[in-house]
Amino acid sequence: MSGHSKWATIHRKKGLIDAERGKIFQKIAKEIQVAAKGTNGDPDMNPGLRMVIEKARSNNMPKDNIQKAIDKAVGNGGDVNFDSIRYEGYATHGIALMVDCLTDNKNRTAMLVRSTLTKHGGNLGTDGSVSYLFNRRGVIEFDAHDDFDKVMEIAINADSLDCIDNGDIYTVYTEPDNFLNVKKSFEEKGYQEFVTSEVTYVPDNKISLSDEDTEKVMNLINALEDIDDVSNVYHNLDI
Image (cartoon, rainbow, N blue to C red; front, side):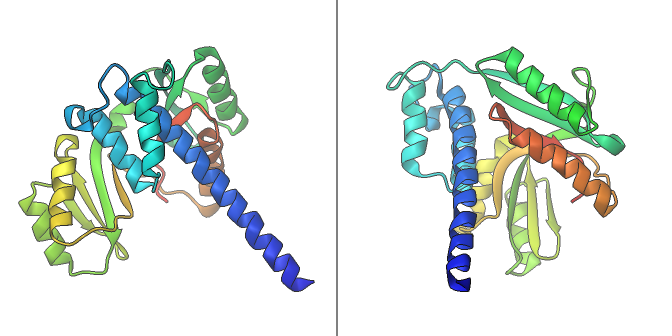
């Protein structure tokens, strides 16, 4: 009986992981469609599309899924009508939140974001109320299995903004326009496996909270990310 229970537990966990992965792929597919809309779908001619495809690859999104999303946007599978909206606000303890959405129904999305914030003790702010606390940056992270000086030398030669040793993870920050060049520089030096590889928003400063308060804020962030229309949630919580 115990063996059966273990088998059931493994399959239940796998089902949850697969469901979560599927949700991530759906969100990224929306981003690809928006980036490819009105173009011929060639990433070499569309830097924005290249960035999203890079994000898709870093999340192990299958090539077929990526191509289907591009084809849909350029007319091989239907119209793409998503609006891009950003909501700014705060979680408890002054944690700043930027919530980026892609939606075909602005009223529905606004209601869901607002109600989720309220339920978890957060509140909406005005446009620009927290975005000034973040900078758009390329972020490349990989396991710290190599000499940090070697990593720093590659980062410097590729004109990266910063290179940080976080103990078990090395993090390289770049200007958005230089992200792909920096990543290519590392790949040419034999670095192929990245923990993170995307252009995102990085806070100027992070706020540390107690374990209990951190959990409360993360419950809000997770609830926002569970909304289908939400593509990204950026925050300045130190986790």
